[in-house]
Image 1 (cartoon, one colour):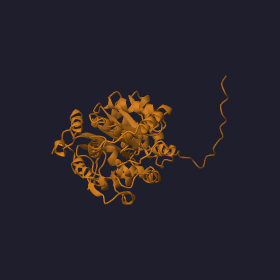
Image 2 (cartoon, helix red, strand yellow; image 1 turned 30 degrees about the vertical axis):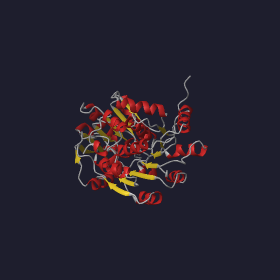
Image 3 (cartoon, one colour; image 1 turned 120 degrees about the vertical axis):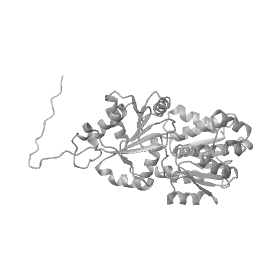
Image 4 (cartoon, one colour; image 1 turned 45 degrees about the vertical axis):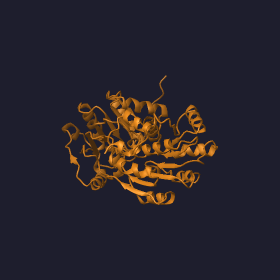
Length: 409
């Protein structure tokens, strides 16, 4: 099957050719015909399967066939990074159609907000937005969806996990009841099904290989304690085997700590977290995509907010709490039929997490022995608090008070 089989209009087909699209992925093969028939769709497909094009292509085809002077489609996404990526893909695929789109997200300066406001007032064809910032524009009265025909919720499970359900329902309440609604989600927990039942009309369900890593990923684990992880990751990155690496840590504080450790060891590395300005985050992602920065460190928000080909290594510095997050993290590598490696550090307190991951993927992950010098590092036997090992105290020794040193100068 090729994209020619969908009979897209000439301008859209030209955009496909210019972007090198040849053969549709399984989710595209199943979803595109149903969307073009005007049906509501619930699609369960993880990141990296081509789901964005599976709704953008029929959407662009349908809007181009019946152009209006109004905003016709709304796409909701959980993060600004994903919203921007969808906008970039819509711009590329729809370049020859003349259709317009805008990414609406928070965190930018006044100039960004003003650009969004002007695009909305000019009634772009497609608005791609995070729920929080979209509510701000709706409350200001400049954005109205009286003529909306299409609503798409991308990574719906992530939006609910991030607490956007109330915003989503308020947004839906301001949309025409007669519309086509598409819901894409990597997982299908009961809360997603309940949401779908509330906002959709007789949706057709599509499921694509849920919760299974790509075949081309070599998965490995190291049983490494927190004190051993720093030397271990430095040795892995120094091996010269990998040219593009994402490191996932559990919190932004841990992201910063790993970044400081690697930076002090003269690695070309960047941290990516929510304390940064939007422009700085965009510059880091661009540098990473352009291979100017070989290593980037982030939290799980990065696992669903980055779309970069050719990543050959993913390191889980901290084992993820949710086994589904493991799927999303390692899904950053081995994309588009390539190969890649995913390494997870598992400490003594992560055994249950490891069991849950292996149960989800229905296989045991290969254990790699620690290098001798890493294994020789002494480790604490007590559980860390707030990410820091607790010191052992001798309860028979009185603690002496220490006076602060006098100020110099």
